[in-house]
Image (cartoon, rainbow over all chains, first blue to last red; front, side):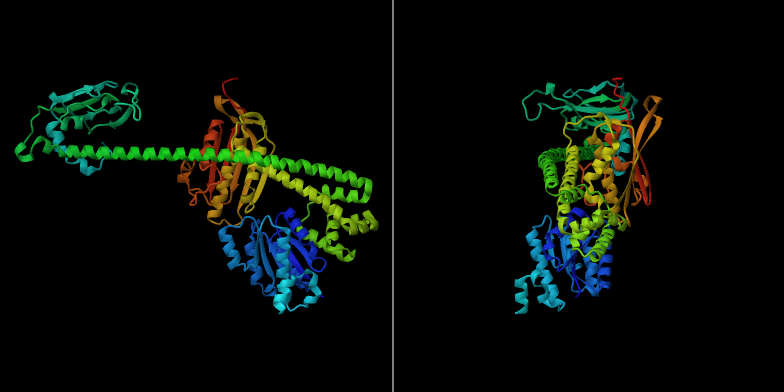
Length: 157
Length: 476
């Protein structure tokens, strides 16, 4: 069975570690991957795709050296292979203009501010993951323990 | 006044010729001499032929108080040179009393008319008053210009004052915040250390391998690129059949297959089930790193806030450069920073001031590159020392800090201007620093008897600051 990956991108390893820890409840059903920047993330996505696996969710920081989170999410949004991939911006310092761009260009599904509440992060991720699983027409019964029951129920009704 | 436009000066030509060319009605005073005193009777209207005069006036009482004018300060009212008229108001208002002290700035020649001088060609040109209307206009215009320039100066002074106040408020505010944060961060730093020590001790008694894992996590200094680590973890995950998180920990501890053999299968098996002890150690390590980072920022903010630090011997400029970079961490994320900080002899300096110099220059470099979206923006900072002829023509040791960027050139014609207060090329004026940028830099560098070199071409702009290692203050 193909694996669903969640990728977190942040240039600060400590932050990355924290996000990964907060989402660990989703493993081993879901794979958690981390990337240190935009380029790293894109090559990781290539690899996942060529392995025949899926990218369910991309959670990106905004301010990073080189390209910004919005740039990354816009690229992901424009890539047909990842059309259904859900996108989250996790940031503490996006400007007003960044935020507008993230919505208009990056088509983000959610915006989480740093510092984040672990429960809030997990619940947002579960909701988006549920939508992804349903959108992709995957067998949701395989993923019950990591899906948001309410979202699932509302969609299946 | 020479400032006046030509059309006001032209009509005066006939008057000057007709009224002020009688050698019998000329006088001269030498430098420093008083032509007329404030309040003194004066029946003459003067034209300055040569030299210059200055007029002072004393307030009747000091404004806002009842203090007598005797102790009030004298204010300069105007300065006048050849072609200007003096005592215009006293003459035409027929009060015949001067409202100013008028003193010669240099040896001065004057021509005059007095209240007995008759009108010339009255039939053709009208009464004396009528004929002198151009002079009155001239005087009026001169006063207008004077008042305007005084008003502008005053406004400018007020603006500078306001800025200084803002700066000092900011300084107080940042010092306050820095102090509070310092205490909080201090608690985190110390307690993390305690927790780590206790934890290590506790584990040592319970399970040596767990203690080892914990220690590895706590002391982890491996720096491997995220992609490499990921690949290695993936390999371990598949080949050793372990959970992703455990494989990642193993990848941190064991960088290659050879080392894997050295540690042996038992250790690997242990990691598979107990990797969380490594994570625990690593968490504590991260907390310390974060606290240390926070301490660095607080320190730098405190330095900028000023406080009462003074110049001390034995300051390492590299430390001040690091402080500045700490302060600007957020901005510097967007650029490549290359540093080449060679060891330098210690100098006598105030860290605060040094940090201010670097932050201002780095900040400007960043803003300049951002304004024109310079591709792959890079800031290079280097330090070195050299010997050169200093004050008193003796060889002196200097340290040089060079800060370069690959942004747009600074046009040659503004190389001087950029160091003046209130000169800016920034459209959006929310500077990081105290808002006076390079003028602060120059003031500080001057006070060290240092020099600033600026070389700027498109794609390479370098500010080099040279500071003597010893401060000559007369004591030695």
